[in-house]
Length: 432
Image (tube, rainbow, N blue to C red; front, side, top):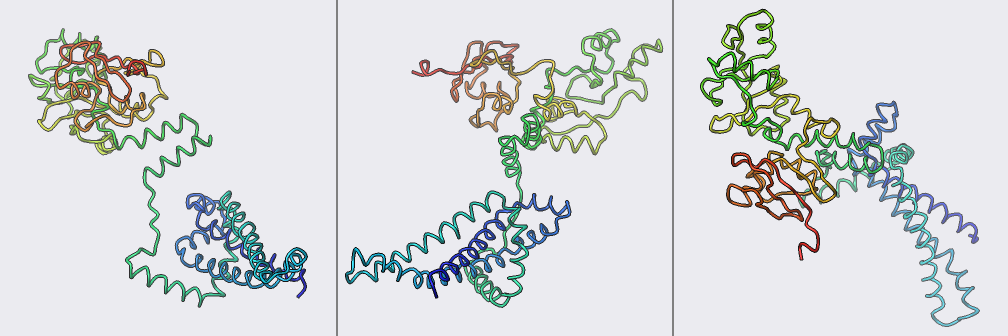
């Protein structure tokens, strides 16, 4: 054969090898979520790609058969095609005993370089740019080859599966999408500009609900307004004026003995009808939803859904009331910074300091200050709890703790309760 014929055959082999290289990367890297979207849009080839991905051994076998066969042929034909011509070129400068060996080595180097660049590296990089589109193009030729070379595919797959079983290696891929995978996809979408910052934050808050306990969003015990059975009408009126809530707990002698709750609108009906205010009137008291303080916010939503109410009383293991939570409280966690609350728990004074309420949940502090974790944080839930845990005492005003590059200083105390903290960044000169 002439040099032109040899070159033509080499180009053909490189093209075939490039096809197999692109097929290997595209079929393996094509995203299942995107392929399912294409199937829903009526793209029949996408369903064939999904079927191939369920049995990756088949198309990998075809690809390897093609790549190895082409590589062997390319090596044989390349050596025969280029060695004599390279020897003729070198003979003018060197005509020693090593001429044939040098010509053969340069021929192998030339063919190998061509295959690496044009049959392997560049096709794979192109396939990685748009794996789904490339997979749609190559899937039908690959399926045809699977039918034509079915005996070889069966033989090689059987041997490979036998070896895997001997070493107890799974032969099927498990495609389990975890919350971490979805969060990573959301981060990538936000960086690429597909998701707006607010959308990303909203989705992140939704997934964060499973990790947050009910106590991180509740109204704490000391902030609850409730009625006592037999409470005077003047006292009830004052509480209604000072704290115009939609519902009030009704207790027997103390907060820990909850007997029900009352709707403030029902009290308003009594006032409008000129009747004396009474919380013990028949039909006024309703049975409250009682939940433990160990539930996550997701579980709280499930309780709201199943019970048909939108608030619950929270008890600890000693059957003491620790707080109350409403559907609005849960949704404020989901919406986060997308809605404005009447009073923020974390107020940024400047670039290096924040005022933080003592009852602020740790998760909110970690997010605002970009702190990954607090020490032994399973032992407390609020920033006030962190201070008590670190100080090992009931804090006083000006007590402080340095942690993770921040100084947490108590600035306000209310009846032994940390009301407010000042958090400042520790500068380099301060550390020195």
